[in-house]
Length: 95
Figure 1 (cartoon, rainbow, N blue to C red):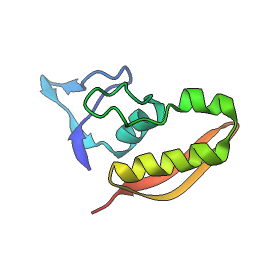
Figure 2 (figure 1 turned 60 degrees about the vertical axis):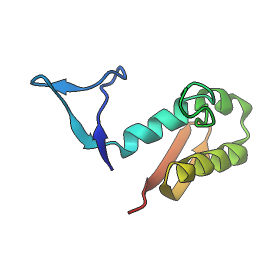
Figure 3 (figure 1 turned 120 degrees about the horizontal axis):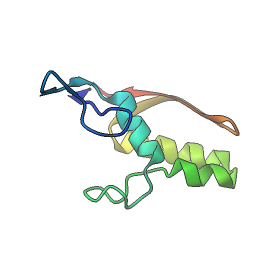
């Protein structure tokens, strides 16, 4: 999926005075994974809150929430692995 890219600080990416357009799949996944519910004003139910959830060590619940959030965003989830060291996510937008 194409859209406006953000830089590493979450600011709009600008090159030569123009916004940069590119594949936003991983960018959107990162936003959904780290946002807490209520942080995205226009979509208050969006967000996994991964930073907070990992402290709970309920990896099954985290995995289920990630799948639900990505599917609600229009992505097809191929694989999700949640371990104490992090999350591996393989998902893409449905065409």
